Image 1: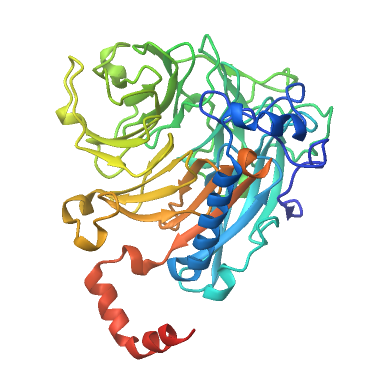
Image 2: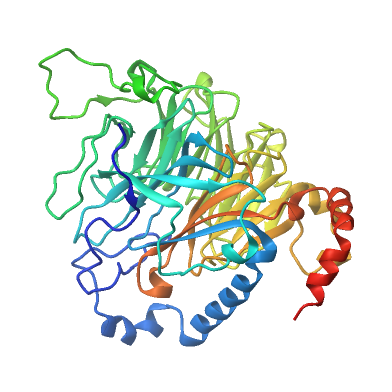
Length: 506
């Protein structure tokens, strides 16, 4: 039986100062201050200029742009839900679809709460009501309170996480099983259905992972991937290594859709075994080739033995576990500075996206890469004004992808449109056809919904803009934006008189 749902909120209360968590970004601007490091509002105000934080003029500009965006919501979006987070979440992922109804579907959503230490860090399993296309009324989707929690997002379960949750990834074969990264060398595996629901209060013991993957020699904080073809896990870390595991032996019900028999991913060791410690699993392989921290990893969509990685050494490296632990291809200067993210096209296993602190997204074709480190991207996408933090291909169309950045924007691109640039789009970057501007601070993560391909969940860390917390948004652009132009014009022609009437109203 599922526990009674409650609204997703902070476990416990806001931070001791009476507001939300504050932030002291590290290199990538994604870490909050610890309780000991926290400064008072007065101290932060006095050091605003020298610390490089936003000035009043910049904040005003952010607010003006946000107000302008909100006024366009009924035109640009088919549906949008805004959910205020008391504590920021550094990752957001869709889980399995639970139920289908006439006007909306219910689906799992994985989030986290990254606290200042006054309450424990948590992994949040939520249930989300996803409104179906062309159901929501235009006047309703723009009428939301930025400080409120959305009625479409309900908490289902809380797991007290040992340390902050930097990254969440679900196992494609069974999305009730997830992996998390924290500030440690280990990867933690959780069966969210069998984990007990916890009440996150100060001093509460952490939840016990179902499996711990060991093999890193230093902290592995961000680079994490699950294989789409087999239950393999990939990770990268500060030890400059990429580590590969197979959790096949620990899965008893991979791919099970029956929640009543979901079982555990851990093989039972017999009655009377020590249940106070989580079982651990060593790696299948450790791969060295980077000269600095590995920031992201991705599997080939067609093989568990092929994967790629990017790092702070500006390198993109392709690996093949069948040929040993050395790089197959190493692009020495994939970007002008640190690389933050990478994604492999699920529809075309030759295409790889990379995002960097140089504010660009680059598209590589692995057929053009050579083993001597030479590699020229097919195209360089320039539309962000700050470091790119996340890139991901659309599950629906092979040429479409999204990118999010520290400039607060989530851009949707179509590579097929690069060569079809028209005079109307002359002022916008080539390939850019939609810009989600609903976040007012850095968009640290987003995820396309495979069950509803044009629906996206995105999350921002709002510490620098609002002084704390974060914003979760679930949104779907109007299908008039991405459908073929001829098809859209034919539909609009049918309602021409109605559109003209609406346009003439003040």
